[in-house]
Image (cartoon, rainbow, N blue to C red; front, side, top):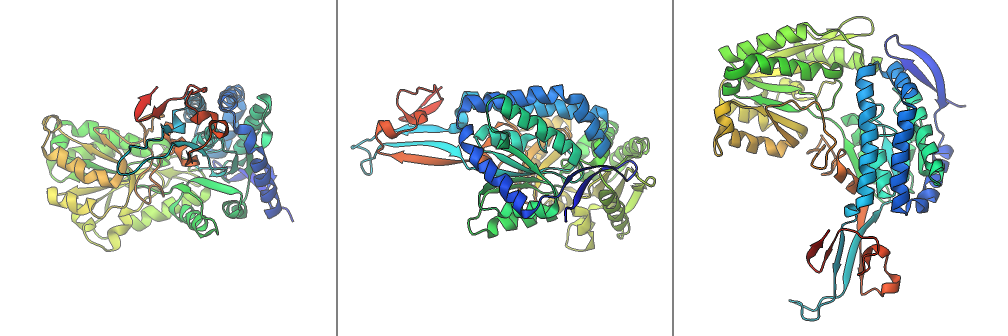
Length: 510
């Protein structure tokens, strides 16, 4: 019997419409096999680039319908979603440019050298090829940029990999609409529509990761869900790469000098960052180390004022709302924890922002306060007040991996090459994939130098899901040895007919 998939309005908790049925095992098999059959059509880089640009154009044309559906299902608001749509189309076009450039193929040619040391060297030529069908698991909190038309899909298509997306249950109508746009884009440029497909259902996600024709997977979501899929990917007869973004506390350290110089500015900035999008960002600052004393008191006064002025908000679904309310209640009940602004239920369907404080020494050793070192999804942060530098180190040593780590420093500290700020950055570096100085982590620019990943549980691999190098997750190198020219791929021929950047006998050619 078919299991219906409903679109739900989080503002009311009421069902909006039935969007689809959950995919059966047979339907998953058909979708993956169709995607695999479509893979050869993606071999032409120029067609892939055209697909990505056409998808961006069609997504913009469908913008009003996409934004209406996304807001109805997520309550994220037209302003936030308009920005997300712009980010999504920018990503698609950015990956089209990367495909055109061709540097991602990492072409290296080393001619045979009988005089090479320590032994004669054969002719070797290497480049990167697509892995195959990629399973993409959509995020709840980004119905566009990290979902069906998002960075995982864009980078996989750019690499030459067909995609089967497991839609998130919080925005199935948006997912179906975006999938139809991508499939229309494929047909418009002469590709099979099946280079992109979308499926629904919890069991569908499990069946997808286990399918023998799925060659890699990308996931954005919870530690529990992501770890289960990671383990399933590793347990296959043929394990596959799994890039999962699971959870991040995103610690912030505020030095005494910084608090003394600009307590009010930092306090207002913290409040704005932790409440942005009702605290539903993977890079929300969830733990802040702030100094005890007068400067720290001024900082918290500013946080209190700003957070108290924030409006109640709607989380993505009732399950997340209930988890948030239960999570903050459990944290607030711990010994020594205070709530200058109490977070929790703001109404039947809303939550109110708040923050908790705790002496930093409570976090320096294993115990019940370890709960404060776990991500709590929603508009809350924990401010741990430290007495000295040693307490900062003691807390940092106990933190798991993170997407980001931030330090706020004073003006004099910023100019000292070997001062305390340098030492603090050295302590934070092993904890995160992106380090920020005097800023806030909410906001992940789509740029070539970006890295959105980090030590586990931030991500399950060393790769990034944002920026140009996200394409590397879906590629593998292959080397040709002593291969006749007639049998070489065009990418590896001396005359360079495709005009690719490459390393040729040790020299970089651009």
